[in-house]
Every structure is written in structure tokens, then in C-alpha cells.
Image (cartoon, rainbow, N blue to C red; front, side):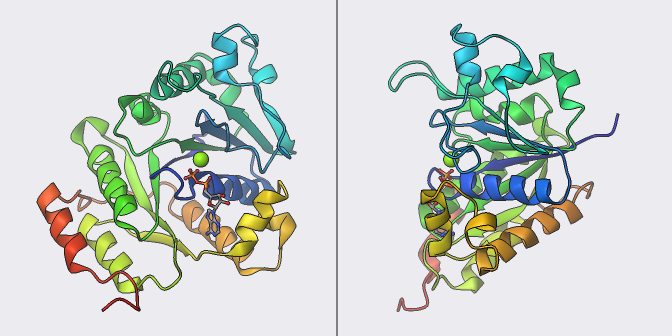
Length: 279
Ligand SMILES: Nc1ncnc2c1ncn2[C@@H]1O[C@H](COP(=O)(O)OP(=O)(O)O)[C@@H](O)[C@H]1O
Ligand SMILES: [Mg+2]
């Protein structure tokens, strides 16, 4: 069986993972690929742009008996070639979001034949791997190519460093950190800082996506930028990102990938002038 291109996206909350995943999914589907986008956030926000705000059935609905086990009843189709499956999550303050992700992965393992119709799987994973459940797509061997979404902000870089630590751990043999996607919070972030950070980790920069009002406007209209502003720079950036990821499919994991120890990260953060205006 042909192995699907399987991308696992991690990054700090609010950094732009769901935005990136929805645009990647749409970009691949527009190129004729058969895509399954897997949302792993209790907010079920992965699919909102793609389903016009329609509330999806979720894996947690299935576990709690609100939905049956049938794969086709749980999957939603956004457009031909683009399906979405959401994990959902427990009510706030109850249960464990990571456990829901592990349940999704178990469900996918049990329904492996359903995945054979797809050539691209994209996991939009909540969080920064502090919770063991969020590692499930790697632990189950479902995904190999990890992409990290980060802004230039320290908390986001901290999460990115943590993700590299987990993904490059020896017990995740075969996991491949494909690169960092910098989704900027502020457009005057100095490129040198982003480059220095990626170099310390031994990881390439797959894309730099500036802050762009078209991205927010399209979200408010329940769309991606491909429909909302198809000729704008954001649409071109996301198309280029999809092409860059496609080009790295099957690449050999870099031996030089390493996370910074805590002291080195602290020293790195202190020593960088992140913004052009800063003294
Ligand atoms: N490059 C960008 N320019 C403008 N707004 C953005 C950009 N990237 C993300 N956003 C907005 O930021 C918010 C958080 O993004 P989201 O993708 O939901 O983050 P995450 O999934 O990592 O929690 C959303 O409202 C999204 O539209
Ligand atoms: Mg999200």
C-alpha cells in the first residue's frame, strides 16, 4: 500500500496551527490530493474554516455514545478530496484532552483500511507536547513528518524547543522534524533571530508567514484565503508552504536535530533583539 504523506503539526496555543493546517489541507486538495485533516483540539477549531462553522461530530461524541462507530458518520467532507475528522474533547475542567487524542489514534489504528483512500493526512495537534497524550500520533507511528508552527515570541520558541526535544528523542525513532513554520505575531521580527533559532535546533525554516489581515478576515467569513483573497500574498505563501512540504516527503531525518538545554535556551532568549525597533 502506498504510504500517505502524514504531517503532524505542533506549536504553542494560538500560534496559528489550525490556520496553517486548514490552508495546507485546502492547498493539497486543490492540487488533486485526497486529504484527511485530523483536528485534535477540544475546540474543534481545525475544521471551522472548512465547514462554514458547522459543528462536527467528534470522536468524543462517539465515545460518549452520541455518535456511532462508523467512520463515514464521523468524517465530514468540506469539498471533494478534503475530509475532516475532529477529536473533540471533554467539558472544561473534566477529563483529559490528551487522552482524547490518544483515543483518536487508537480509532485510526482500528480503522486503518479507511485511511487507504487518502494520500495525505494532516494532524492539527493541540499543545506543545508537555502532555503525553498529544504525542500519540508519533507514538502510534501514524505520523513521521513533524512540522512546528512558532511565532518569534519567547513562549512560542520555548514550546518549539520542547517539541524538538520530544520529536528527536531516541524512542521516537523514524520521526522526522521537517521544519519550522514561522507565523509572525509582528512583522518587524528580525529574520536573523528566526534563522539563529532554527540553526541552534538543526532544523530548517519551511516558511515565514507574516501577520496578514486577510487571514483573520477570511476566518471571520468561515473561509480560507484561497476563496477570500485568492490573489493576495497569504494565498501565495500557503501554496508555497504546501509545495515545500511536498518536496521534503521521504527526506532523510537530519542527524543534527537537537533541542537546546534549558540554560542554553534562556541564554539564547536573553541575547536576541527580536524586533527591528528594539535597542
Ligand atoms: N499570519 C496570520 N495573520 C493574521 N491572523 C492570523 C495569522 N495566523 C493566525 N491568525 C489568527 O490567529 C488566531 C489563532 O490562530 P489558530 O490557527 O486558531 O491558532 P492555534 O490553532 O495554534 O491555536 C486565529 O484567529 C487566526 O485567524
Ligand atoms: Mg487550533
